[in-house]
Image (cartoon, rainbow, N blue to C red; front, side, top):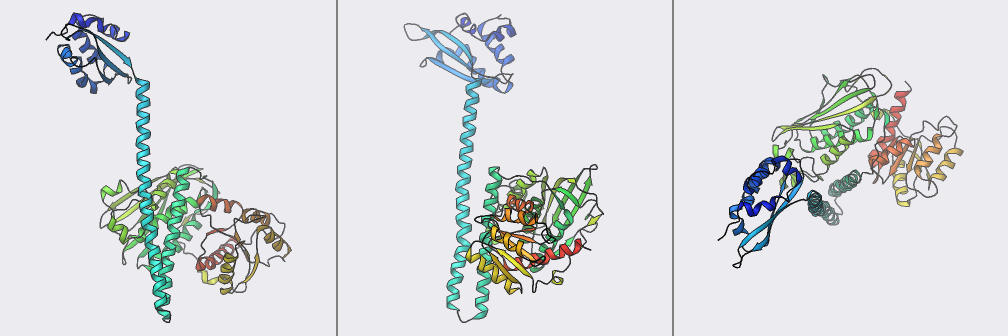
Length: 515
């Protein structure tokens, strides 16, 4: 079988890029020129792959049943090329006697191909995530719903047993709270991924944020038999008045402590601390850390801990209720605040979560520390207080009225923001001790109503607590209610105990400010 010789292949080389001639001097036989081309211009990782392709001695055999063969490779400069050997002439027996070698740039097409492959992979991952999401949601929604249905049926069987009825109500409420948490997490994650959230920068008191969290989680830890401690030694910071997003910060710390309590056993210890590193007169880095003695995480899981619906195992999912979205939401919020989050954990030992966030420093203040215990809310009675409840939904209005009247308050109702403004304007100064305001209402929404009240020229307009009650519970919604002049944002469905505690806490704050 004839073999294409160097002479016959030399013409092919002339179609190579001009840079090759400059690089090689266009001297030597075809084989040498091709190998020289390979060794000097092709990227090192492709040289061993294309050398066999350039072997002239086997070229005729490789083209026996083909009219063209090709290979693709990357050049040293990063560009992509395709080399082709095309049959130009055969003898009477069909053996190849002449070929043409051509080299063409395919960088653009390769880039398009890579873009298409990337898009295809992204679509595949998105489809897999969607399937996983639907499967997870189906499980996490059906499980508490099944429990609620079962409890209701059981309630019918024990209609005359007050103790059993109380137990059933408690179980139903637990399942309903979990469903609310699930919906909130899913909506928050959707909002974060859509990029619709706005990072509002507000002046806030770090000590106040931490006090509120400490009060909540001290109680939650105690209910589970967990000792909740504050790192007294390191829990001191120089600045309390900061500029940033207190809602994001509160959500981050809440998610971390929720996890710590959830995965800890009775008798264990949960420790929280804060450190400040002052950078200059305007900025400071704050490190928040939460250490538990819970079940811990494996090293393999830590790498995926911030993925959506990530849980250690199916066993952990069934044992510890949760959406698997908490850490994913936390990570995205930390990223939005230009911070960092680190997990240090060992299975069976516990977990330490370290969050570092930079803040602008507000008005200089005295040293603050976490050891400041919150004042008991029992000192602030709401008995006889007059409340203005603004709600356009009849059922929600009735629920709110019932809760507040049960706590000893006198309730006046308004069906929208405009009516609320008119009622407040006509009332005597300090007549109302608190305003509970829905957000989405006809004629005038709750945000506009709150702004209007705050702008009134009367002594109580600026200080009367306005508490938002809304089905909109995104971080952005909470910030917007703050900017409108509202003191607190309560998410629906309404929690009776939370409604009662909120006004007591606001009275405590007001009393502290006037001391």
